[in-house]
Image (cartoon, rainbow, N blue to C red; front, side, top):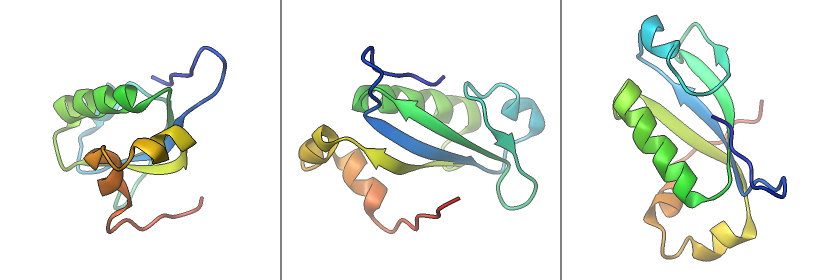
Amino acid sequence: MIAKKSLGVVALEAILLVWGVRDEVLKKLPVEGYWLYGEYDFIAKVEFADENELKEFSLRLARLVGRGKFKLYPIKLSSSIFKNSIENPQIKEMGKNTVFYVF
């Protein structure tokens, strides 16, 4: 699932990391990415048109792999997301205690 706005503008891009999940579950992930061997089991770049799509994706992923077994690290946020981050605790929490890695 890689979603884009109809105008081709992506509001949010993130790196998805998944760990502690069996191969059978990784095969069911709704995104294309790379299997890893080590601390993490899977990595992918995901794109969302808006915050609601991010929330829906996170809920669906939590049902599939379980809570606490994945992390979305934002790498690109639109200005509208920053503007709304004061009212959005999920976006505010993304930046707290987060280490960003450049691949």
